[in-house]
Length: 283
Ligand code: COA
Image (cartoon, rainbow, N blue to C red; front, side):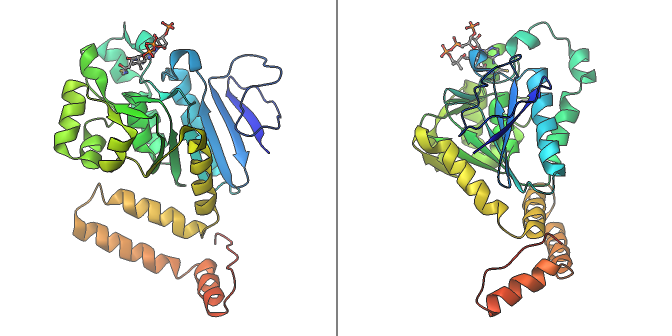
């Protein structure tokens, strides 16, 4: 049973649905849809006619929706999805075609991506169909990727006379290694879902009819775990890509100590010893 909030534009409609985000009586066409399922927040990109290309409104909508979920103590994990045909086919080329370097420099896109990266609860990308350019960069900003068998991953910016600008050289190289990243970005090679799995870009590949359920299931499992542990684990693993090992190990150790000041550490260990399920409080 879902509860829908249309984020962009700010239209608010309640609707029972099972990931069917089609509004009963649409007041306008929102480019982002959000829904909560228990402790999981679902964000969907909703520009099917443009293969969910990421224009400014969509990017702002994703970031604001993620921040709203992050600020909600009831929500413990986020799933970000497009539709079966496309997660997102990249930045909106129509919007970029006449852009100038100075507009790019003074625009808010970089700060929006930084805000997305600052989300503290885990984010799972549920990817089906095209996942290209900025779409692939967005998926890689998430913490895990569940892919449908139809997913296709690529950085085809070279075909447009530009290059990746939101992690498509940096995160991609760290994820799939130098050789494959080079071929994808230099020669527009697309990866099939199976290749993306083989190259450690995604967590798993499932039939297209299950990809969203699989992502929601994983999110619900994580959402049921000790919230403070989850938050610090995300922070620590992401730090592994930013700092030297010795520094990362010290910070990990301090976060480990910190959890011993939580009620959940006492509860988790007591529950284990008493052979019962823990009741997490998030404090
Ligand atoms: N920006 C803006 N519009 C886009 C888009 C993008 N990144 N990707 C697709 N679209 C639009 C198309 O213009 C088309 O709109 P139209 O029906 O008004 O002409 C619609 O989405 C469907 O795309 P189409 O190209 O007809 O679908 P396809 O199945 O033949 O091809 C792709 C699919 C993904 C291979 C192709 O759309 C494509 O190459 N897209 C651009 C990918 C890209 O370069 N991304 C990086 C951008 S920096």
